[in-house]
Length: 185
Image 1 (tube, one colour):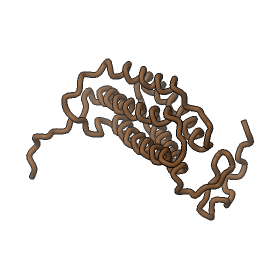
Image 2 (cartoon, rainbow, N blue to C red):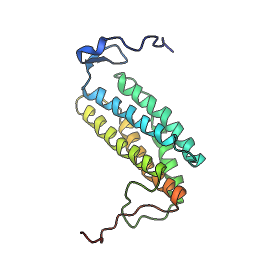
Image 3 (cartoon, rainbow, N blue to C red):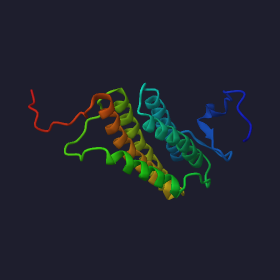
Image 4 (cartoon, rainbow, N blue to C red):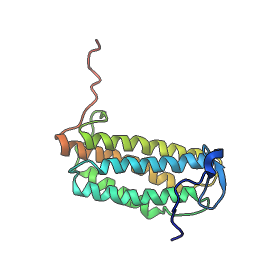
């Protein structure tokens, strides 16, 4: 691996630009920077989720692997033309989705984000995953993005929804259901 940063501040970004992984300088608000920045935010949200005490071990293991893959995904977005996320990464998420979803009862109502600290943090990560996917689609309108990147983020948001359901049941034994028939005051 290349050199490590020994000095954290460089002042090179003071003009509103940042360096991509290939050395190119781009505006900090470019679609590419927004895409990999939101992937980084998603990875951080999963880190917050993993900091919740007593997550089920299989959920924690799954999320830890996802953090590594999200770092790879961010690297792919940071280096134009670089490929890290492949079809087998998407397939792994689909297998995890099927495995975790099989133990859950069918949905009959909408679920509110909540149900305990872990479930709420998982719902937050899910919402950020959806935003990351939107940011990558924005980038894909003007630059080439491998289809596996958007597929990965799409499956990941689905998996995080299912994991939120699993965690809510683990924490509280139930989920917070939206009540469409409540009376308004």
